[in-house]
Structures are given as structure tokens and as C-alpha cells.
Length: 353
Image (tube, rainbow, N blue to C red; front, side, top):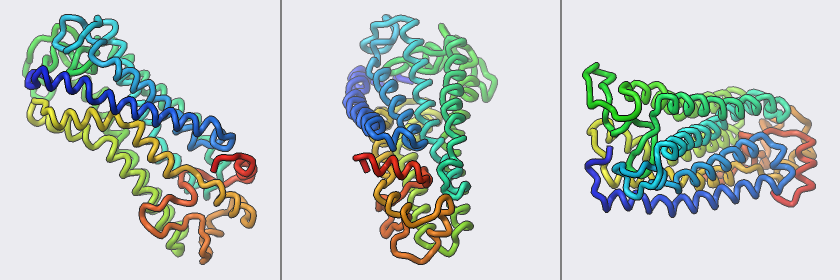
């Protein structure tokens, strides 16, 4: 994967993303502080899922900051100071945290589906959370353990990842032709990367687009006469998917280039590394934009009857909680949250909006 990169380029790939990791960690710490300091936030499913995202970001950043030092001494990785054990630990944490972060963020699309389907009744969305946390932990853990059992965490450009050693060895899974013999890791590494890497990642990245499309059309059918409601939900689904693209687009482009050419290009790989290191920033942007406006909840709750919210919002009024005059306006209420009188009381006693 890296023979076509010079030592200077490898060094830059070690150093530059670390600055982004610091910024990403600061963003995640702010998210954790913002969620834990608010009684209202601590009791909402959306905020607790984003808390899981923030914790994953911090573990991911710490592991990536370890960088090339985890690679075995004597490998082609610049700055290698570790051994096979440290390399396996770093690779394990990289796969685990990358998947947990992606799954937590993808689970928001399913949460929005449940919120809309339940007529925005918060109590009818609580059942989903336990399945989210279970799936987010168990699936990445199972995949990481499986990869570890094959000794498939080995040195890559700036650390350790899911590959055999040396990078590029192994039989061609698609043509069946034998390839370079691997010194460590399975000879069928490309097959494992397909089933344990590409397919799970494809599902995680593709499913939100499918689910959010369903959410929009479901909401449109529920209140097709309420243009403000339809526009707000469309804006929110679009913004969520835009952040998803921002997080993963550079990595997808970089992997596509490598798959087609068999070479790593410095610029595309650097952009992918830096943008991936900024995942905490993207999560913070999403969190702040979708964070519930407590004042709007309290004002609307006083005059509305719960949980029948959509019929109220369907009325032709100028104070729709889903009012959005411009596409990038922050919504007055998030599609990832619901309405509940008890939560309104908690918010009314909290200092944070």
C-alpha cells in the first residue's frame, strides 16, 4: 500500500493528522461536557447516543495519536517502536472504534424513523436505545475479535490496520490467482477484507440514506398538507446525510483510487486521513445543529396535548415547531427527539437550552 510513498510523505502522514486529532478530541470533550451537565440531555435518547459517539471519538483519537509507534520495530513504518502485540492492540482498537462511531451515527437514522412512526411521542421511542447500544458494541467487537484471531492486524503506512504483512500479499480472491506469500496474517486476506471490512462498512454507510429517504416520505404522507413540517423534515434529513458524506467521502475516494490503481496517492490519502481525524468536529457540528431547542419545547408543550403532536403541527399556524424558513436554519425541534411532558419539566428546570 505504501511503497510508492517517499519517506517525507510518510512522515507528513504521521504528523499532520495528529493536529486534527487534537481538535477532534476537544470537540468530543465539549460534547460530553454539554450532555452530562444537563439533566434534560442525560435523559434523552438522542443525547445519549451522541455521548456514545463522543466517547468513541476520544478512544479513536488516542489510538490514532499512538500512530507509528505501535508498529513493530524493523517494519517499513517510520517511527516504529512496538511489536506484534502493540500492533494488534492498535489495529483492534482502530477497527472497533471506527465501526462503533459509524454505527452510533447511523443509528440516528433509525431513531428518526421510530420518532416519526410513533407520532413524535418520546416514550414510544425508548425501546430502541438498548438495541442500539447492544448492536453498536457487539458487532464491532465480534468483527475485531475475528480479525484478531486471523493475526490480520499488521503494519500499514502510519501504524497498524486490517491487512496481512507485507501489505498487498495474499491470493487474489476475485480471480483465484495465487499472490505473494504473507509473512504474517492469512493468505486469503482479500476475502476477509471483503466480508469483515467492506460489506459491514457498506451497510453502515448506505443504510442511513435508505432509512432517511423513508423517513421523509413517511412524514410527507402523515402530514402532506403541512408544508412547513415537510420542509423541516426534508432539511433535517438532508443535513444529516450531508454530514455523513462529509465524514466518509474522502476515505471512500481514497480507497476507490487504491482499489483501481493498486497505488496510494499522497494527496488523496492525506485528505482522507485528516478528514477522518476530524470526525469529532463533524459529530459536534451535527450535535449542535440537531440539539433540541428546549424553549420551543416548553412553549409548545403548554398549549398542546401530548402525545398527539402531528395534528397540532398540521394546523396552519405561524409558530410551527418545525418552522424553517431557510434550508440551513437550525430546526426548532429535532427529528431525533420526541415530545414528553416530563422531559419538558426537566428542561424547564435546566439552565441549558
